[in-house]
Image (tube, rainbow over all chains, first blue to last red):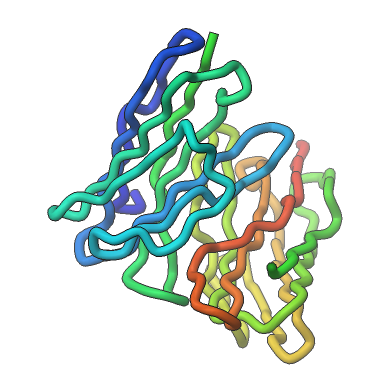
Length: 112
Length: 111
């Protein structure tokens, strides 16, 4: 158990819908990262939050947004879903820059 | 940005065999981690090793930061070692702290 909790584990939804993925970081970790793993793109960085503030954006679509709350949990919102958004979405947390990152179990999103 | 290359892309071993997986990176790093993604999709931390050598049971890893590569050794492989092994790094230039992943080595251990 990495200490990073992601919910839900599985999600099946229709095209055009909106979903919210949730992540609770390890106790004491201020950084939360979101990654997407699809078959053709590998593990891609989406966004990084540190202590409630957005620090970096990767290849995140405009239809996607995220936030980190005062209790440090984070949510990734995916809207106007397309078939191509089907992927495994991971959250990771770390204490700070350059320190070891730990990953949650992931949320497997299937868009039908 | 920093580039990460892993080799070989695929590896098939008989149970009990040893193997070496390689990770090359294009710039200096603050962080290098090895992960095992099991058949259920979980990413399991193996090593946090920006430099030096570490061992954990049948697994060991070495990172030579000055030459920009890392090696993961698996000895006496077991079927439970099957899955994909990823190397991921955080570049030391700039302020970014995200991990950049290689494309992985897919390992299959057969009886």
